Image (cartoon, rainbow, N blue to C red; front, side, top):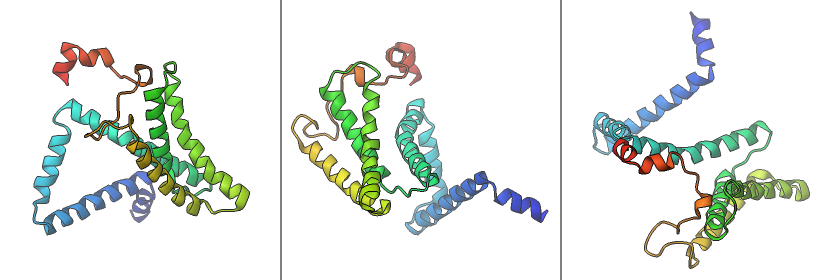
Length: 193
């Protein structure tokens, strides 16, 4: 019995489930200390998340970049590199993709490849390590700040961010990856969503 329990605890999925459970417990304690009923709060959260397919799709849209960024950190770690700069690399990739999507009319399918600029930005940390021996933790942390302030600077330029909003201008149609594009606009799609 004890061997089975130890074997079960060593499985990666068990660690993930225990982490999620601990997260919910800590969240419940914080909610209770703040004066809220944790069961009501979690009930409202889950009910709101799954009320409409539109909400589920929004969760997926927002979660995928975070998941892929986490996978990039994991991949680098498995390769023997400790990459703390994934956030900055993500920012450089997204701002470059948005700018190219707005100002350059490239063929469809070429636009998503522009996100690779984030990888090139990450390669800068590798070059600093190979050329000057700068530890990747230090360089990637510093490059995160460079990416953040570069991103903030770009967003202040005229023609990039719509005045009075948190959105950028529309990108070219060839830069959009549309899933179920025509169906979403049909009557059946609108009704479903």
